[in-house]
Length: 463
Image (cartoon, rainbow, N blue to C red):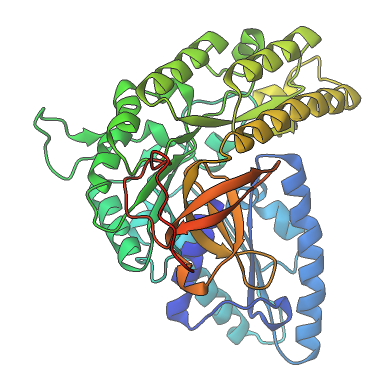
C-alpha cells in the first residue's frame, strides 16, 4: 500500500513540475512515506530524517533549499511530535491526506516568500477527511508491467496488536466503476498484472456500477475480480492482504473459475494457538483457518499460500508456540513473513501483562523461521521440471539480468533480452533455492492458458 501511495504522490507532484531524482542532494523535496506497524520502522524514520537534514544543510550552503516531508502512518500517529523533534521538517501528513500535497507545498512557498529570512513553519495535516482522497487523486500517468491498485483502505477488525484502525481509519471501499477505469488505464499504460490492495482487501464492498441480476447495490471482491478479468490485456490478477474472517464462498469459487486470478493467496493467521488468537481479537480459530485452506485447495488443487506470524505476543507460552509450529507443518506455506511482537503505543496489547522476554522471542522466531524456510525451499524445489509462466517485470542486480516472478511469486532471475521485459515467458524450472528459482526459456511469450503448466509439452525456440 505504501508503494502505491508513493506512486500517487509522484503523480500529484508532476503537474507542479517535479520529477524523481535518485540523488537526495539534488532534491527540492524529500518525502519519507512511512509505516507504523512495527517499532523498527518508526525508529528508522528519525535516523533517515537525520541524514536528510545533512543534505538540507548542504543545499542551503549552496543557495538552494529542500523541503522535507513525513507522510504515511508514522506521520499520522506522531503528528506535531515529529515537528517538535525535527523542526527542520517542512510538513507532516497522514495516509488519508496526501492528496493535499500540492496545497501544502503552495502554502510553504507562500510562507517563505512572505518572510524569506525565516524558515517556513512545519505544516501538520493528519485529519481523517470526510471526503475520499481518491476523489482528488489524478489518474496514473505511468505503469509498470506489474501494477498496484488500491481498492480498499482501513480496517474495522481492531486486532489488539495493530495500529491500522488508528492510522488508516475505518474500512472504506472505492466504487467498482472507479477501480475498473483505473485498471483499464493501467493496462493501456503497459500493465499485464494488477495487484488489488487493501488493509483488509477481501472486506471490499464497493458500490456497484449498475444493479446486478440479484438487485445488489454493492460488489464484493470476487465480483470485482470477475469484471476485471474481462479487460483485454490484463493477464494476471492478485490481491493482498486478506483476513480469514472475510473469505467467502464467492472468493473461493473465483479461484476455481477465473484463470487470470493467480493461484497464490496471502492469508495472515498470526498464530496457531486459539488462546493467543483470542487475545489478539482475531475472531477465528486455528481450526477455522485450516478449514478455509482446505476449501481453497478443494476449489483449485494447485493453489499455494503465504502468511504472517507474530512471535512472542503477550502471554505466549511454549505450548502456544508449538501450536503455531503445528499449524505451519500442516499447511506448509510457500512463503511467509514472521516478526517478533513489537509494542505499538495506544494498542490494547501494548498494555497487556506477561510481555514475553526478548531472548525468548528470539529463540522462538529462529525456530519458526527455520521451519518456514525448510517449507519454502521444498516448495521451490517442487517446481523443478515444470514449465512456469514467468513475468519479467524488473531489472535484477547484475548487469543484463532481469527478475521475473511465477504465479506463486517465486523470483526467477535470468539473463534475457530486453525485448522480453514486461512479457510473460515460459520457463522450464531446473533448480530451486531458498528464495528463487533457476531455469531456461522454452517459449518467448506465454500464449496458452494462465495455469502454471503445459501438460509437459515444450516448444523450443531460439532466443
